[in-house]
Image (cartoon, rainbow, N blue to C red; front, side, top):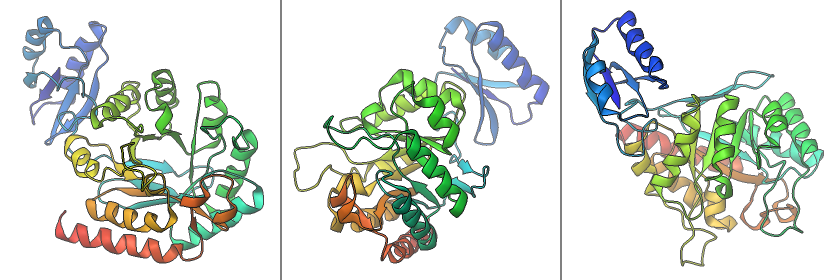
Length: 343
């Protein structure tokens, strides 16, 4: 249920609502919507409705949308902002609420020289964050699986020398402690979008989370996965559309560009686009990235490598560092034009 406080409600009155919630063994979630404090409870027990309505400062008690609760605009009307970095020598990056965040780097961490070259290049090109996989989920068990902990150490070194905070994928609850120790943002990949034990565990770390849409997941299913993280008390979640699997074979996946305005209407969480995994082909990445910026995405997650043809993973969809700065300038120009129109 959703408990809307009056605009004039005091902190003490709000505290009474929280206390009653906790006395019923319910976890309250406090936010703001339409200028008022809002308390959300995942319970819809009708017997409690009257008790909450009788408390001072309470204006209205209404049911939350079925399934989608903490991610909904009912709970928080304003666009959310997720802050990444700001510690361990990394710059502070804010994702969402009108900004365009560019996250770039190689698909996988291969070696020190290549990673540092890529990190310096994307920073100089205007990227805000670095991406790179230390643990890589691969379709084939014989393909390169990443450098593991050594890859995390190299990403931490790249952060130290460039000041770029980085995001990297965590594959299992077992790997989570060491990944969380090193990274600025935890990525949940498409294959793990509905690994609910992992979602709860990453939420409990308190670190920002980048949640990728599963390759055959609906928007509702993506939001429900985000609910698992928010239910732990961690609301620093960024959603990522990376293309869904359809009958079309001319691209690796089909980019659901409509997901951007749909999600912006339904949730306060920022939404970014991964055009690399959607395209599967280098020459398609820039057009899809520009379309995402025009549609109102809060950011891009792009694979970039100094020598993409030699990349250990996803070579065919990886952009060269040479010329990447020009794309970043175009992305910001498109985004700024859209912002000026109010789109």
